[in-house]
Image (cartoon, helix red, strand yellow):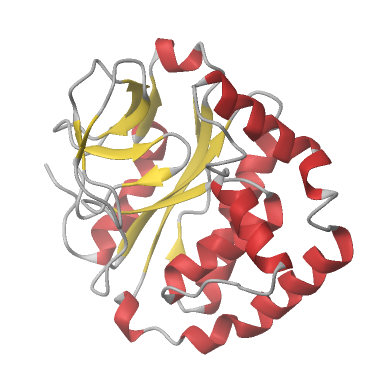
Length: 241
C-alpha cells in the first residue's frame, strides 16, 4: 500500500521506522549504509523559505572560515565519497559528490535555493558533508531497498531524460520496483519533493570511511531545520544495515 495521505498516518510510520529502508547484501558489500527518518507538516508550498535564511548565512560563514576550494579535497569525508565514486565507476572530478558540490557552490558564493524543504536538506548536507536524499513518502511504496541494478531498469532523473541502467549500478527502489535514487548522487522525479509534499523520507547516504554517527547527525539536522518551518519528525532515526 502507498503511504496514507494524512500527516497523522506519516506519524504512525514512526513505530515501524526500522523496516522502512533495507540494504541488500550486494550493496552492503560496497560498504553502503544509511541513516534515515521521517518528517511531515503543511504542504511545501505553504512554508516560509525566509525562516531558513539565518541558518543559511550561518552555514556559509562556517564553510568560508573552515575551507577553501584548494583545501576541500583533503577533507577525509570528502575523500571517502570520492573514493566510493571511483569504486563504482564515476570520476568524482567530473561528477562531484552532491555534498561536496554544495560546499563548492557555497565557497563560490552561489548557494542554491529550491524550496524550504529541499533547502533544509541542502544546509544539513553541506554542514555534515553527507549526501542527503529527500523523498515524498506519499509517492513510493515501502519498504525502500538499496541494491545493485540487474540492468535495464528505467530511471527518470530530476532535470534529465529517462535512462536505462547498467548492471551493478547501486540504486534505491521501492516495493513496486520504481527507481528512486542512483546511490549516492541522483534522485528520481518520481519521488521528488513537490509543492504539495507533506511527508518525506530523509536519508543520509553513507560509504566506507564515514561514521554512522555523522549520518544520524545529518538526519537530525534536517529534522531540526524542518522544525523551524513548523514540521514534525519521528523522535528516532533508524539505520540500515
